[in-house]
Amino acid sequence: MKRVSIGGQAVLEGIMMKGPESYALAVRKPDKEIDVQVTPYKSMGEKHKPANIPIVRGVVNFIESLYIGMSTLMKSSEYFEEEEETSKKDSGKEKTSEKSENKASLIFTLIVSLAIAIGVFMLLPAFIAKLIFSEETSSLLVNLTEGVMRLVIFLLYVALISKMEDIKRTFMYHGAEHKTINCLEAGDDLTVENVRRHTRFHKRCGTSFIFIVMIVSIVVFMFVKTDTMWLRLLSRLLLIPVIAGISYEFIRYAGRHTNACSRILSQPGLWVQRLTTKEPDDSMIEVAIKSVEAVIDWHEYVKCVREDSFEK
Image (cartoon, rainbow, N blue to C red):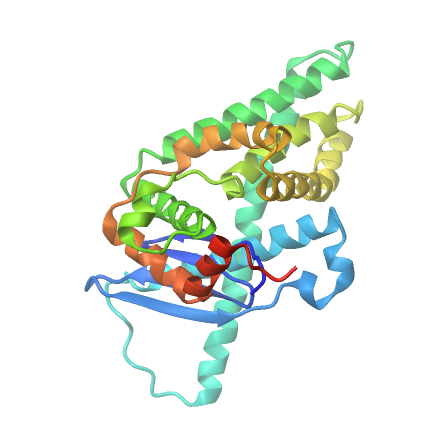
């Protein structure tokens, strides 16, 4: 067995886990049973070598994660719709049509969500910072102010949504996801008791990635000087893939090393995870274990961790 990096995401009353060959969605249904859906999946980096080039792979991974994350989030919400429409009596052709419509809806939702996120977290701070200062103000100060505003908006947003009841439960599932992955990577059997002992923070978390994006954007934009507003906003849009790619390399490095440098790089993201993860209950941990079991033979994996017998 090869050493792999299992990643996941909390969804509505459940968890998605992505393994080396598939991703699984485990959801605690209204009847309290756990339903697991497994989808075979091969990343673009595995299919095409250019998609695995440093920096480029970060952009590709970001897009793939967004698509899978939004898809599984929408699937998890389907379990909790009040009533299903009358059972379909349609032919297979009409079912295929419905599937295509769902995919189109998913892509549209993803594009709109991404556009709102870029507008609020990237363009709005750039716009406000430019308005605050005069033309004679140092571009260094303007860009630094923009970066600080971006961080503040992000932290305020996370702090506010964490007060919502549904989001609190999602953050608890987020904690269960991290604790289960930490348990697996430590070489402990995936039992509720073992998982409970592990930390709810993880260096490869998406929260850490977003926070690193904020930090990297401050550094990158320091070197971009624009005198007009439209050029300023355009530069922010065009540099998003570069920033995402660099940030991914930071997270990738931190996740694979335990030296002082990786700990320093990881610490700010771990602090922010105090907002985006909460301690889960045992029922949530059970869901997380089920999602891991669906994508990897954890018994064999744990054995390899203990014996350090992974394929080189």
